Image (tube, rainbow, N blue to C red):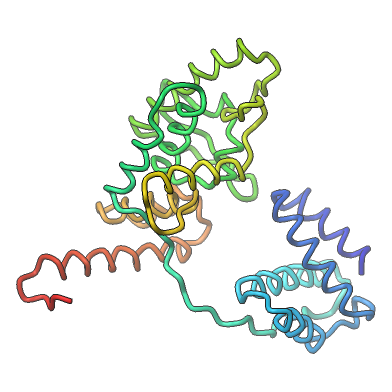
Length: 296
């Protein structure tokens, strides 16, 4: 099976443009499958896939992880079927574990402004962090999209950024005035920092104190740090700011198709989860404002 796993991983890299994180996850999931069966790839059937999922569940894995691993196996056998290696996709009829739909965590407008204010300060770290937080909220980009930004992706004059999303699809996003000013201030600070430390990454927009392109993990730490300092109780990360961006746009009347385009979603159904958030927001406002609403 290893031979086919390697071919599938190569396909993901070269033709699908999958990220390094996705490739590592796919490879890890398929290596577990290979360990659980000694059959030839063309002999793996529906019952083997069910046994694979059941075995993972027995180890106590979360349902979200089980679903992801089943999705990996489905994609793998879909590829093998297309290549003529197997006659059928044995994972196609295996039902994934049911999940309770969880609404994405978002911040209120007031908490969002408090978060932005918390990063204000002097010096390279504060100015960079402020630019990162403002850009997340202004554009709703993914953390991998932010860390992947290059200097020439930010058009200062037009106030737009070029983002490379999933599958290396590019999209242009408008940058709001606060984020625009924050990023401009950061670029000036970055130039001053370069004079002190000449061996910095010349392409990356956001860099660490060591001068290297900032990592996804470092950006998450930055967001969590300021969220905690602000006193926000719930667990807030970069993805929360993306959800907040979309939710606030919807609350202000933005069209769902526009939000889909800004977020870089390939399917409108992915974007539609924000309608649930908007309805909840409206219900909260109604309960607090309407004179006949039942007060809880």
